[in-house]
Image (cartoon, rainbow over all chains, first blue to last red; front, side):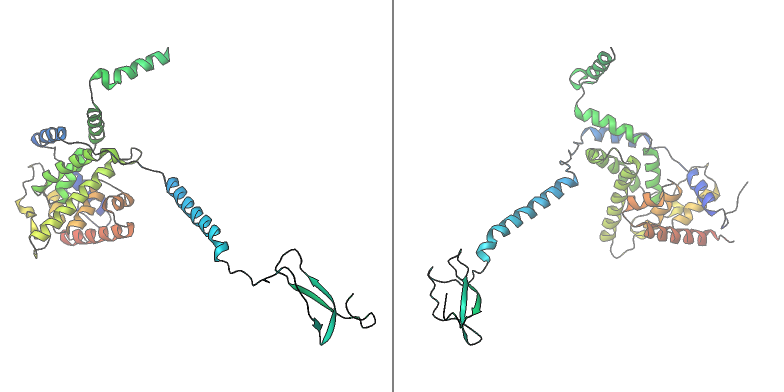
Length: 128
Length: 189
């Protein structure tokens, strides 16, 4: 009984008809294949590394780069200008045109920096 | 006791005792995987190549290549999909080669026989022959996807894996193939 192919039964009918024709592999072809198989040398696979290996390598490379950058950073950094001598002579210090009463100097470092000036106490006269 | 039996079994399986080499074991494993698949692969290649005489060569080459690279096959994956991928690539190479050799002749004209010249077994009915005649009008890629879907019953994701195309692309090719076959078979609502 022939079934007509329609839009509705298309997939089912095509599948059924296509699967009807199935041929056996010819004996000669199979024997030939088995003979040739003896001459084939299997290719051994290369070592398959997990993706964590590659992530680890990437992290190591990044940390080495960071370490190099960290070591080079001080030499790259521009030094601040500093005084040539440890002794600092203050000849005059003025605040708003008046002589200063107090001079505070950062004394731990030879690079002296004047950090604060105060107005002179005129009553006491000059530096204390 | 169980441990002793297990050890004995391992000894019996040992290549040193049985005399089998690693290659023999590979061969046995490969043939075991191949056994339930090879008939479907053979028929698929023949159908996809429009029953061309090249189909036998492609089939044999696919099996030999499969054995050569059997070590790279991930045993957790589907062997059928893997071996069909190898066959697909060989067919693609064959079409490319023929296309270059016969340039500017089209792929269809490059070496596929006319379906009228194909000798079907007598048992094959006319309505089955009609399907192959309709499929013969398809482009090689359409025909391949058509038979992977209808003959081998691969799913869309599996066909995408075999052919290396996207699922959307496979759906589109399948739609084109269906339309072309319907047109030849004059399928109506």
